[in-house]
Length: 482
Image (cartoon, rainbow, N blue to C red; front, side):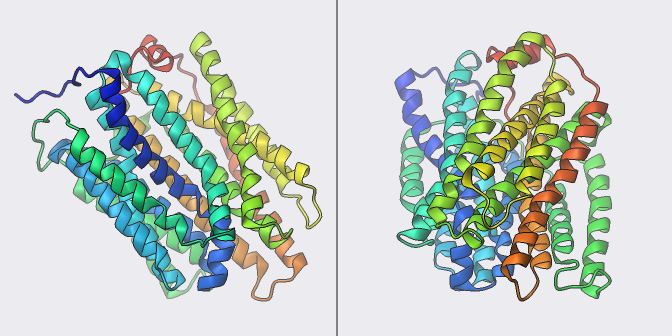
């Protein structure tokens, strides 16, 4: 029978393989945030300013679905082949997005690009699991974690730099040389174990229904009240399709041999709350990353490059919080206090951001953003760990995939729904006052999500971390790949 155990490779051989994987991980994560500071420039050149939030949310939406699907496609057809296919899809989408002539086509091509991006994120970690034995894997997974964080931090910075100097189109063109180099390296250097065939077992119906449900919900919540009345035929049709699709999804997932989202996971109070908090934390993160730079450019006159710099302290706060919470959770096995603190800290910080005006000082924006990032870091750290700890160890891979799906959906909804709030509040003939009021409304509307998250954190039962999960947290045992 073909082997599925990692090959015994030297450190140098592993790093030769890991370099192209990290490059791919960098550009796929970079494209989640790089458009943030370039959106005003893109809107001015292509028109359709009221639709610019879709440039971000379209990518997040499609990548959320393929994050679930491509992992199983790799099991069926071999991870190397599916990984290469994902890179090609991502690069084609990048080129098409770069040459887009109007906002509609840019959004469409960003969605296509996201199809590949979701596959890249899910397959990189699976390939690491193929080439590195479990006892050594945490060392190399740390490298990939650093790369992903650097990409999120660098995104707004590079997006502003390209928009101010060369062209916003280089936001997408930059992926091409990196991606082509990665394809060559993967094709020549990455040799993975052969996996037993599992053809016909992928939950295709579940994947399609997940895409339909998430897309229609996103559409009616975004368009309703902003250009289309809530009782208009279009909105009513979208609501009907959403409800029907959700019911069909539940039925399909309940009967599927290998469901994308096993419904049994949600019998756990801890897993359900962790999923919601993961989505809410991602929602607030993307609201800040997209609309704070937009406010700084539109209202306070900052360049795209300078506006991107404001987000770096927030992301550093996020990284610092996860670094602080991790050792304490590992030492005590307790975690409930962190989402309580994180929800309160993020809610209060976003309330402070919601008081910004045209003459608010830079420090009055940077400081609450930093604390908001720290609060989000506490929430993300625990949402993943508590959600994993709530299920049987053999289901950790599936649970991790489902949690990441909610994280991606939270980011997509944050980008799109709050864009609709901004456009609807600003009006068709915005003044400085109405623009400031609109941004304040956007930031303040993130607070209720943190209030709900705070209440859920208090209600969540705390299941002390098992010895297996403590070993996972310490890097002695690895989470199964999804």
